[in-house]
Every structure is written in C-alpha cells, then in structure tokens.
Length: 484
Image (cartoon, rainbow, N blue to C red; front, top):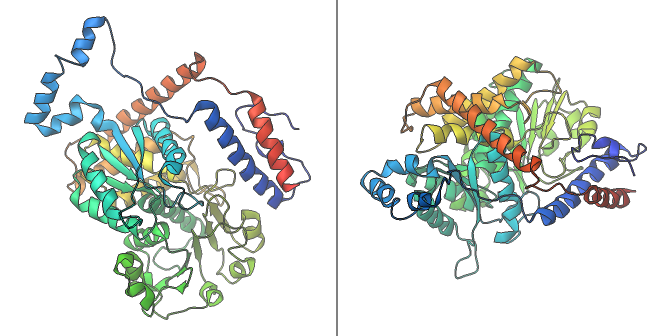
C-alpha cells in the first residue's frame, strides 16, 4: 500500500507502478467511487444549513422571528422584489432533478440523485459563493410514467422562494420541454446544466482548441457522437457562435441525424433533435467511418468507453484533429489511445486528465452573474458570453494542447465569468438591476472568499471532522484488487 494523505494530490502514485494506462484509469475510477461511498456515509451527506445573521441577546429572536419579522412580510407583499433584499432569495439556487439521467447510471429513483444534487450545491457554495438546496422530486404520474409537467409545476410553485433554478439529470425528451417551458414562463433564471452548462464549457474548450490549431469555427467539420440534451445543446450553441451546421454530422444510438429520420420527426417531443435533422448533415451520410473522413473535431457525449470511439476513426480525421471524449465516468476513448491514433488535442470530463471540460467551470460564475443583476432568464447569448469569458481567461494564462480550459483552482475565472454574464444580461434586457462589470467582479470574489474562509474555519475548529486515513486505504485496496 502506497503512502497517502487526505489531499489526494498524489492520486496516480497510489497505484502499482506496473499498472498499464488502462488499468490505472480504471483503478482511479473505482477508487473514487468507493471513497465517495465511504466518505458520504462518514459525513451523512455533504450539505447543511446555517444562520448568517447574528444573535446578540435573546430579544434578537423577536427580530428574526415574530413580532419583528411582520414588517418584512408586509414589505414583500407590497413590493414583491423586496424579497431579493430582505431574504436569502437573491443568492439562493434550487437544484431540481427527478434523477432519471444521473451521470452514467441512468434512472436511480428520485432520492438516488441526492448525492449528485448535494454535490452541485457544494460546488456552487465553494466556487461561486452561492447558497443552494438539493431538491429531488417524484415526477411519476398516475400511469407510472415520468411526467415533465410535474417538474414544471413544481418549479413554478417553488419560484417565489429562490433566485434561480438549476435543472439537473432529467432524461430526454422531458428535459427539453421542462427547460423550454420554464425559460419562457418563469420569472427567474431556469438553467439546465446538463444542456446549457455543458454547451457553454464545451464551446469554451473548442474556441481555444481551434485557436491552437489555427482553424476557424465556421470552416471546421464536426462529428458529434451522442444526441442527448448535452450534445444537441452544444451543437446549437456552436452554430449560434458561428459554426456551420452543413459541416456537422451527429449520431445517436440509431444512426446519423438527417431529414430522413422519420422516427425522430414522428415524435414531437424530440423537437430539439429534429431541428438538427433539418439543419445538419445535408448529404445524409450514415456510415460513421465516412463521417470521420476529414473531420476536424469530434465531440462525444455518449456511451462510456473506453472502446466507444475507435482509434481507426480518429486516424481518418483531418490534420491536427481535436477530440472531446466527455462521457462519464469513463471517456469514450482514453486520452493516451486517442493521442496514439493521431489526436492533437484531447479533452475529457475528468480532472485526472489534461483539458477537463467540466461544468463546474461554468455554472457557478454563470448563475452568480445572473443572480447579482437579478436576471429573469439566462439567454443563449449569456451562455456564449460565458464560453468566451472562460476561453479568454485561459488565453491570458497561455493556452497549449494540454491547457485549453481554466482549472477550478483559478478562482478569478468565476468572477470574470459572472461579470461578463451579468453585462450580457443587461444588454439582453433580462436584468432587473444595473451593476458595473467591476461591481459584479468584486462582489463575486468577496462572496467566494467568505464561503471558503467559513469552510476552512469549520474544518480548523473540528466542526467538520477529518476522516481517518483508513477510509482511503479501504477504497484503495478495493480498487487495486478489482483491476489486478
């Protein structure tokens, strides 16, 4: 057993040196899953609520509750927007899911998604200084089917209590109806991170990857593997940012998307996929190897690998091919295999490989910017503004084939992103409140700093207890045994 510490900074070094690249990748995945289970059991989850107002004597209970709080209630009654100032609503996000499409695990029942939704709330607090609550809902109707209207109604009822809603892990086609309906009918931002969030961060990575290989977004041929909420939104945002749909080919589990796909056309609920059938792949190419001929970019968000994407497909691509293999928890092809096949730039969704295309780089800053100017919605232009903000931040650091995206420890990226998104919200006419770029930037950094200092203080004082190393050792032992 290798020596370890709680920082997990030496993750690769924990495993036997004679492990192959594939064994090491598998072992790390198993280790992280086993440790997650043990650590969640140790802490009983990872989110709690705490007061943020002081108690200076027992009469303060009469200020924070009755009779004093009556003045707050009537003030909000008389001027509804006071709710953003007189409560925590202005900095509160509800993470809402029916847990039907959780990571690579599919439908895990409503409460099965709590770990993921709490994780989202955890990241919002630490990375964006945002308070968030995990709300997993039962979307079954009387027929035992998942009904998107149930989620829509729930969010509408919830709306007066929060400043924004982050939709998460809702299966398609329900996710399309839920998002598009609520974007129009709700008076607060409703953001689907699996769709818009993934679209924004992927666009950011693509902008910089294309800059490195000196290709223009409007000129490149792109193959998309997977046609779920993530990839269909990625394609839509790339097109909005200047990509040419005629140079795009998207594959789902039944083949390529094109005007001949009557199976998609006949299902109105899949309207987002049909839109791409109408605009992409005009030659109706159906053979996947033919699609890869001369392709500049592969964007895969499909079945976890490592053999979903074949090395021979990458070999057919154009000069300096760009490969995004972003399935979780295992990419469609491991980066080393993609590089061996000729890929010039490889990105995945994992933090233990270079170029992590991670939604965590997007939603904390995007939602923070929207909250601070009290936006009524998050427009596609705001999502694209966030993508360019992330890309430009990395450019200032110096991009190269193994660094096309900022990393989560580069705190300023969230503040710059929040400010750029807020300014776009004002331009788009969806902001209730005017703020300057610098005001949004400074407030975001301040809130992030406070959130992290509070967390550190709880750890230092022992209120957040330190797990014993035996948890890590148990998880490591199981991982090594599983792949040896």
